[in-house]
Length: 303
Image (tube, rainbow, N blue to C red; front, side):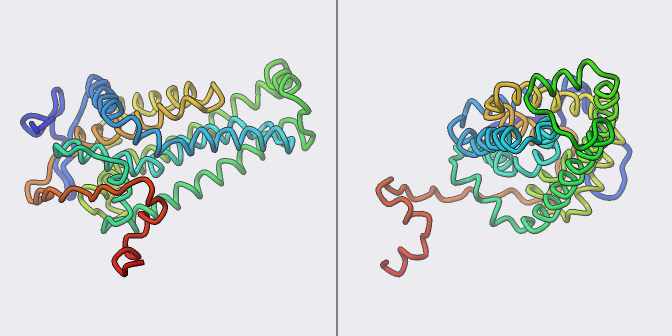
């Protein structure tokens, strides 16, 4: 397969000032469009696999919505939906792997996404994912505190009552301004430490600390494109969440694949990195063997 980035650099991308660690390129807004285009091509090439990986997210969204409505904690519905932006970089690990294998000229399958669990850097990925989850929990607690500061502990009985409180009262306007401002700070922190962290760990087996430092350098070298990328992510996640979170089945894989291509644009290739040898094709197993085919070691013993 031809190199998707001829000359090891996409159009408009120029190397930034060299420092220790991976070389950071400067990119333009057109590169964001190209990353999204390539991400969409990946999604079209393996749509069933992407949906299988991401079906948990709309299901989780529906469960969250039902839980919120059932337990009279309606004010947390929007913060929970916004939390996808904090957890998304870690949740898309399998999608990065699918894009990486397509880049190598392979025809990835759903099984390939599970290879991230055997990556030498999976422990580092899990550590950073735990950090993002902690950030998510703190955000939810903060959002709850902001709501209590505005309206006290009395919860809205129904959605119309909640909408009236938020949209037609001074306390509601204060809640919107302060909540969006604080949420923006949480999203900014998540973007700065994880915009290319997980693809870097997957591709070069970097440590979590090195990956976070590299992400910070990427944001510092490309403030305008990274701000635009954060806005794109936020808009797409909101759009995907509106129809009962079902749109996330498309938005999550699109952003996951596009993030891999964004990583390729902002991080120059490592000249010392050895190419990954092609993998032997997986053994095809009949569907009748499910779920036994999930445990190959048992078949070796003749079980």
